[in-house]
Length: 160
Length: 361
Image 1 (cartoon, rainbow over the protein chains, first blue to last red):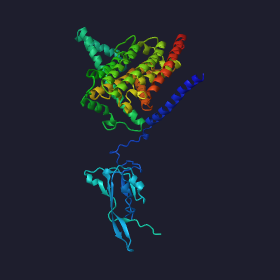
Image 2 (image 1 turned 30 degrees about the vertical axis):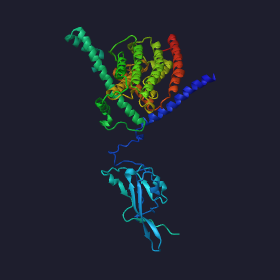
Image 3 (image 1 turned 180 degrees about the vertical axis):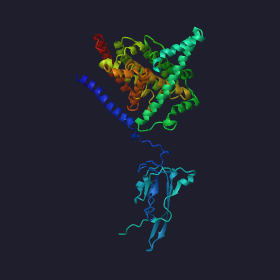
Image 4 (image 1 turned 90 degrees about the vertical axis):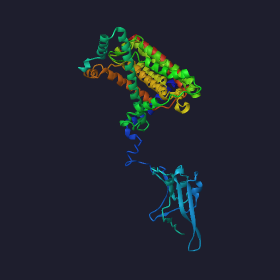
């Protein structure tokens, strides 16, 4: 008797769970505003790209054209593809200390897999991922970008 | 005025016109040719409509738009696909059994076309009023599995063979409950002829007239026929992820297109069987007692009723496909042999009892 009850209750629970799924898909079918697809080239003006989309690496510059990169090369070492090349120059400050200063932050977009390990590795939070995505160019060389703006300086940290 | 002209008059007019020009033998031959062309045209138009519908339904259910680029709202996509398949080479693998390999798509498609013969699309629009119509359809449509097995075997590909064998196991099992669910209605109706079954539903469709057994038979029929069609959630024979499309992995070009067309034709046939047996064929929807409503329903042409109901069942099958996950082979056989078959046999007993007592309307 118990087995018979289990037999029929399994049928009813099966129909119940199937109906739950069918109701959801019918809701999607009957509510076209739930559609996520974007008709890309046509809707370029109203295109919505999520903020967290990993499009390219940028070096954050503030309004005084100052960045946070201390040329520690952590990102260069973390990068699995050798996308990042950092060159630095040593400068002598007034009090006679030698200091490493960022010369060029070279980013090869063509080799980047957008894993964002460089962003995690950066101790200064100087770089971030931007959600721009229209990167096509006609020459491969144009993909090699210099990320530090011309004339930019290291952000002056407060001395204790 | 247009409504007064039935399909019977049109067919009679064609027959008289041909008889005026040709001798009787040639009249039959040319009529057979015309009917064949009409059937091919119907199947192709329906297949295009179904493919477009399927892709749109799939898209909307998965939060996509479906085809949008070719034509207005992607309406020309199916034609573009057919054109592409026509231009592609029909490749035969090296180790394949050449004869069987090239024969299999024709067998599958021929079987689908054979099953179209006894259907009645509208009053007077029937190719062959066979006195065992329902039996003929279920008998012929199960031959299709031979074509699928041929395709799977001759491809010389282990995935194709697995797909073909699975398809065989599946169709052989589910043929039973699909047949038994139709028999429940045949018991109540007392005839196997498609024409008689439709006429017996002039005062109400069997799904309403037959009380609970008819509704249960309809549910079993939809499940079993979905399985017979090798469509999700029963698409083990194709199973893109594990068998890379199963029995038609090695087919390309028009040979693949024939499998595709046969699949959609089978889907159309199954929906038409469901419409004819359970949903009243081309009979309009009537509610006993509401005379004004019934007269209004009578004004809708009968072939619109027929194709409307057919597309309703087609939509049900598509809805299943894009909602349910695929079953395992053991779950598939368990569903048939432990649930559908015993319950359908009990259902037939109840249906017979109701018929003997005369409880159905």
